[in-house]
Image (cartoon, rainbow over all chains, first blue to last red; front, side, top):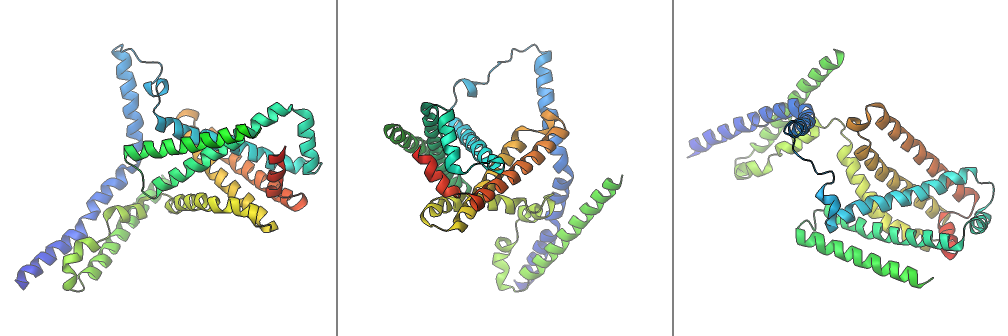
Amino acid sequence: MSLLRAIAGKARLSRCMLRPLPVSVNVLSSKHDLRESSTEESRKFFERNKQLNRPMSPISPIIINPPLTTVLSISHRLTGLSLSVLVYGWGISEIYARSNFAQQLDMLQATFPSSFLATIKFLVITSFAFHFLNGIRHLAWDMGYGFTLKELYLSGYVVLSITLIIAAYALSSY
Amino acid sequence: MNSMVAFRCLHSKIALNLAKQNLRNVSALCATRKAQNSLLSKAIPVSTILSKYTSSDHSHSKLWTAERVLSAALIAVMPASFFVPLPAMDYLFALSVIVHIHWGMEAIVVDYIRPSVFGNVIPKVSLAALYLLSILALGGLFYFNYSDVGVTQAIRMMSKI
């Protein structure tokens, strides 16, 4: 019995030693090629379809009828990007500012109509609320929660509803 | 040519490290016979070893974690800066928001300004420009904290117009 165990242990030991190497060497050498071959693959696909004269839809179905998850995903980027532009614009313009902030606000109110400023404010509040809530949704995914299709849509609708409530509240306070 | 040699050297070094690592694992695991049953469960997964040695930049997985930690921290930092009336909170607010924005914009630049679409130069220039803008924006907000009312007070004032 102990002999058997020793043999089994030895076999396992040599397997342990050998197993990772061939796999890793494979992966190592093909790591770079993989990326190359995927672009090559898509080039072939488009070339073949061109040769066969296959009609290509100019617009992908995902653009015509996007699912909620797609809309929320791209909105997360768009809201983040727009808020970023505002923050960076503010930060960089403060380097060149010649007046204090109270005066800057007065100048803003003198330059732009109040309806414009109110619209910007509403957009900022709504964008921030959405980005904040959807960001929590993203963090949950990063921790490994909420990946079933049902949970994806449920959390998506929760984020959307709370954002709409905040937007409605922001509108009502004008 | 040189890079090819360096590449090969790197490979053999990685292979050597892998072998060493496995020898260490094996000797540690086979040390006690009682541990035999848990041999397989204790072995470090191939993927872990691989990702440790094959990633071109070792800090990437840590960077990913840092991005998430900062995002989660912002949930607390942002309201805290409004409730804790300390000048330091303005600086913390500015720093964490700018770094969060920088990482987000970096992801956008890397995703959309790709070498396969824009060639080899424009993606690098864009990324460099982003770094420049981030540093300027951070400097601007720090300067604002130092010479003006500070970012949290400014946001309060903006919300009143």
